[in-house]
Image (cartoon, rainbow, N blue to C red; front, top):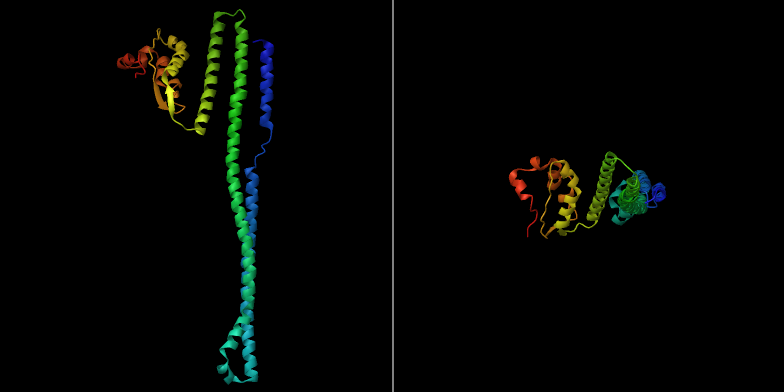
Length: 291
């Protein structure tokens, strides 16, 4: 890989970050929340006016009823005398009460119309809350997608650029000490790539949390190959592995039991042969998997 090719990759990587500057076309949870608050305010105002109207109409109805009864009784007393009060036909009295209660009937009709408006607003509020929840979920998914895209593409492109410069440097006449530093840097870059792949695997597992058969042999071989340098630095001179062909059932993270830094194999290479395990455990290290 030439310097020009590496520079081209660098330019492409920088251009690829432009999508993070763009706005999201998805509905904004904050805007939907503002609409919900507006509807809640309208409902509160309508209920408040409804209750105020009901109290006014009740007072008016009672006043008109008392006034109507009083006027009716006063008229009877003036024209018929007190004895006629005992002879009032029930039908006339009921008609009088019904006529006086007319304002209550009218008020109930107005209140019913306002109640319909309240129900419509509540229904609208319910729909907005549903949209708000969906917008929140979509917003979180979009943020997660952006972060994963940044990790998969932009960070990985930067890693490839670093690898390209490493290959260019290897063509120069370097001292052994500098070569060792380059090897360490290259190992660190490879481990960064492995971390990105693990994140991608975890994301896929979240999408499909399935259990499947996992091949053990390639996982162990990869772990041994990745840790040979560490083993040599910790007095482990010879690594011989006779690995049988076998499978285990597990999710996509099953390989992490062997590959991740907290795994027993990795710790063995890290701490060295004399400190890794007890003699009984070291005796078992030759066979990791049996049929």
